[in-house]
Length: 200
Ligand SMILES: [Ca+2]
Ligand SMILES: [Ca+2]
Ligand SMILES: [Ca+2]
Image 1: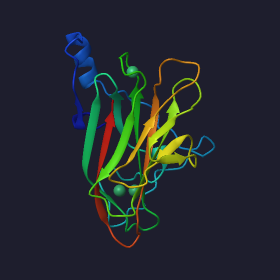
Image 2 (image 1 turned 135 degrees about the vertical axis):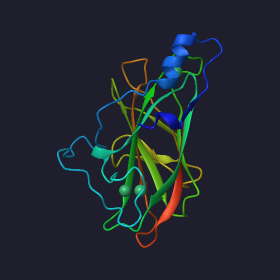
Image 3 (image 1 turned 120 degrees about the vertical axis):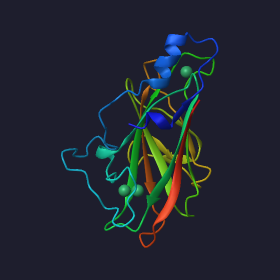
């Protein structure tokens, strides 16, 4: 749980009790695999070697650490500093997950932006969104489509990141789970990065 890293901006029109709910409730949810056919019965892998950060082991989508719940009204964001990637015993991979709740607002569907600050050139960040209801038909407004782990987007540059605008069929609520994967540019060096998430 990383509720302490989430900064929310309650709407001035929001009922106080609801604002408190938004600020402090971080909905737990079952970790989902990026690929529905993957076997989730394995144990958490640790391939970070001498380059481990506080979220390890995080090398598999099934064991992606949860960063909590984000809403598009009020807009929510989180900056997670002090992360590292690379120089693992195997192929170091960092997975993260968070839930997105599509609240009632004039902006409609959530815009989910994920980028890296201070990452080495060549580090890649991608994400896949699984709807709580309905099937996925998302848009990559920033970055390019990546269907390797589901319906998602991949950043062309880590500092620019990607923006995924989820759209879940047969429901007006584009709620769901976002899985994010960070891959190292090199397995020979340990590189720092900060993970930045914004939902609006
Ligand atoms: Ca790591
Ligand atoms: Ca890792
Ligand atoms: Ca909304």
